[in-house]
Image (cartoon, rainbow, N blue to C red; front, side, top):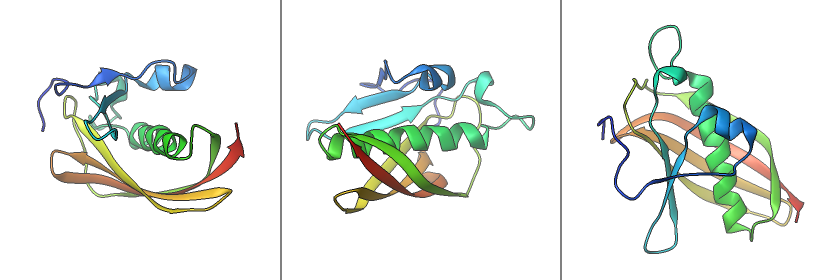
Amino acid sequence: MTAKTIPEGFRISKNRGPFADKIGPLYFKKEDDGSFRYGFLPDESHMNYNGITHGGMMMSFLDEMMGQTIWLAIGKKRTATISLNFDFIASAKVGEWLEMRCEIVRQGISVVFIRGELFCGEKVVITADGIWKVIGK
């Protein structure tokens, strides 16, 4: 999807903290099976000098939403990013809806491994592999 609108059913993710508020708005949609989808619609404030969505914005979005995915999966315990590696595959323009897909690869007692991808329609824009530390309640 490359429309300049928010897809049906997505709502603004609120109360994520000052940084998420600054880079947003970020969106989520709860599916019928209880899982969540996350996305954002880049505007002029998300662009770099070349007129495409800034890589730092996309990395921040993935960090936020991969962390949210883990938080929900482990019973809403606090976590912190230990390591997060990105590979840039393509670019995204203003108004191109970007949506994350991710999966937890392995979950231990104190660390969680996760893999994510950021898509524009069916085009992969970024891939990410991360490790999060479970730090408690």
